[in-house]
Image: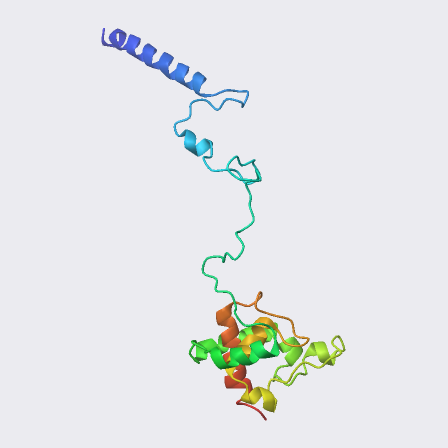
Length: 193
């Protein structure tokens, strides 16, 4: 008798579960069935290339406002000119300490970005010059002019370039540029033979 009294409940539950299962799916893939959180399936924001009713030109993907600066980026304010180089030498101060760790990192970055042109000892005799690929000899980092140059000038030249040397600012992070400058001033220039 106990089995037969539970049978209608089980049958009703099985029918309800089957009905829920068949109504929640659609084999055509047009209907997704019941959506519990429709805001997750349908974006409230504009899609990148969708038309924008609120924009004057009707385009969603707009150019940044002129003069806007990306977060956490401070634009480099010194021009790639002789005046900018001298001003950078006077005003820029290295806030990174001259520790062994920073000098090792500076040497690593020097080997990657500078050694091919300036050479291992910074004499301007790197492989690209000695192999004939560059016809103009790169600057010697241990010349008298460079020995008296402030560290800010070294940083400026790495950032903005100088003469035939291209700007490395877009390739090297600011802290690593300072570490290269520290390595040049503290290791290369102090170990002149």
